[in-house]
Length: 98
Image (cartoon, rainbow, N blue to C red; front, side, top):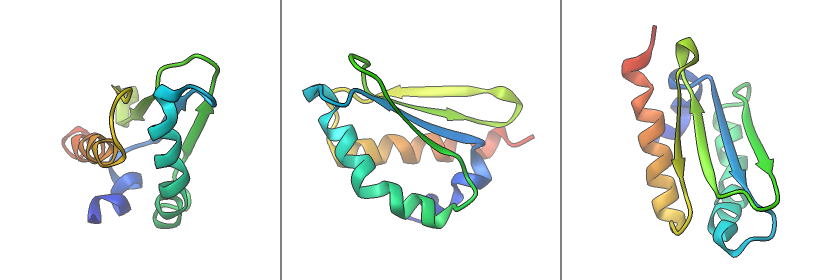
């Protein structure tokens, strides 16, 4: 999982959006609870934003160089699937480097 240490190299910002109480967001909340500390330890100066909003569908937003943004909806995904989607977003940033 070397890609976890490349957040700050391939991205400018990472945002997790989810509902605090919705069952649809449960796996995303659990992912953030289990992985935030590790991701932040590996990328201490990198902005990882957590946005909780009632009724919002769970998503990850990645901001790359030149203001390019991509997102992935996470509703219905398990924790390993969320990890895979995050990895894909991080790796997608390598060719976008300015």
